[in-house]
Amino acid sequence: MHAHRPLPADSALAQAIAVLARAQQDAVWDRTTAHNKLRSHLREYFPGFLAAFAGTRDGIIRPEARAVLAAAPTPAAAAKLTLAQLRALLKKAGRSRGIDAEATRLREAFREQQMRQLPLAGQAMGQQALALLRQLEAACTSAADLEAAAIESFNQHPDAGIITSFPGLGPLTGARVLAETGDDRSRFNDARGLKAYAGAAPITRASGKSRSVTHRKIKNNRLASAGYAWAFSALTASPGARAHYDRRRQTGDRHSAAQRNLFNRLLGCLHHCLATSQPYNETTAFPTQAAPPAAA
Image 1 (cartoon, rainbow, N blue to C red):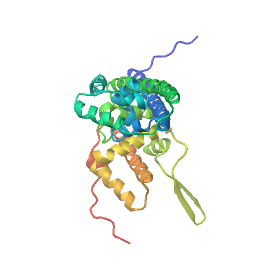
Image 2 (cartoon, rainbow, N blue to C red):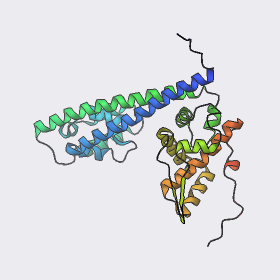
Image 3 (cartoon, one colour):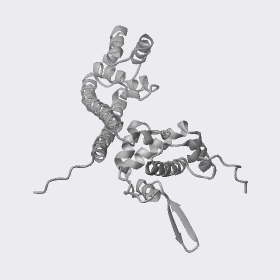
Image 4 (cartoon, rainbow, N blue to C red):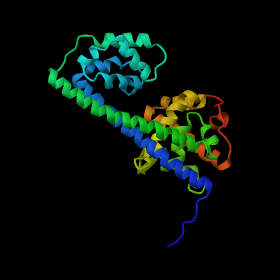
């Protein structure tokens, strides 16, 4: 048997980040699947619960929504909840502000007249909802625990400061980007190779007088997913990124194409900054145009 040569400290850390970041992404996808299953089931027999949390961020994924559903999985049980019980559930879920107003709102929402299943059928559906809720709870816990572990490992990597200097790249998305691109500077000879690997670079096909430009379907889907979140967040974090996106939209690109083009631009900047060991610079990445292009 041959002894394994130990990896350099940075490479070993990058490998650990890749394992944690990919596991966290899988947990997020599992959470989405569990959420969709529970939401579809509630729509059949308890639409009032969905309506009660429709205007809140994250909807039924919120801890207070899960706590209330666990205590009252049927419309009949929810209608019997008192203000004191609702306040206790909200506090147990971690809510600290506006508890009285939220408890009052939920009690009124649950006591509104709505269609119900027959008692035995409603109880059975409530049991099924609790089973689906347990799956959602497990996925939420896994996603949160793995997120904390991935961020902790990522913050120890020497490239973390450069990566998070980019607008829209927080520690978690940065960990996902590092996980898929790696920290081997020789892996991609130039930015074009990295852009093609991420699916950000377009494909141009020409035959005779016809010419078409399409997006890449063969790509690293995890990196492309991280790039979508990165570019979306950069729209509000970087004036240059917003202006670049708006220019692409004005030239006829749809939202997805303009956002993919922005990701392509940011990815090229990231490759350069990592290769030269320098942080992101807004002026260098998006220099101000001297004058807008003349209209045709």
